[in-house]
Amino acid sequence: MSKKMLITGSSRDQEWLENMLADIWYKYFREVRQDNDVRIVYGRKAKRRLGSISLDRKDMKTSVITINPIYQDIEIPEFVVEATIVHEMTHYAHGFNSPLEQKQKHPHSGGVIRREFAERGLEDLYLQQKQWLKDNWSGFVMIYFPISKPRTPRRPAAPWWMPKI
Image 1 (cartoon, rainbow, N blue to C red):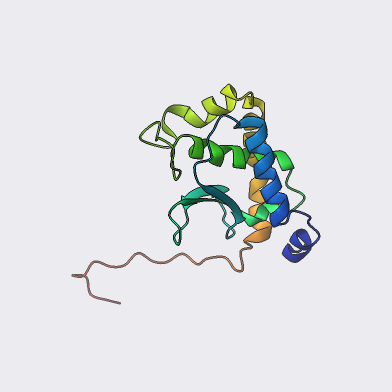
Image 2 (cartoon, rainbow, N blue to C red):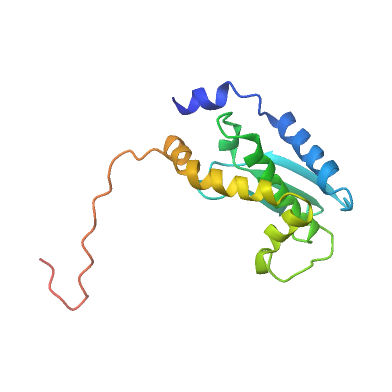
């Protein structure tokens, strides 16, 4: 199946993504104040980064959750997308790239993400996503980032003092 076929037939458009964020906020993050605008968008394809949260460069008062556009592929289960958004919302709730008070120095310190999933009754979602990614993500990466030709190994550079052959 080609890349275009995987994404084109998808109903996972911008509206779907925004509705997913609103639903997750309502179900699991109701107590988290929304002290600024929070947007969610598809970003650029990435092999390893599933999502991120940052402040908008043009409006530093707006938080932007960016999601890997490979998630538009309907072969990827919704729970994987949902878990990624919950992960980014956890960062928001903990004060990373949001106006809320920062709760710890580092965004992933001490297993805080898994603990947050568990406290919100979502540990099964966390574990399900981890397992699915372990079993399936590399296959999707190969579809969206095909290897055009094998890389030829380079000879290590000779030290400057050794004559060139």
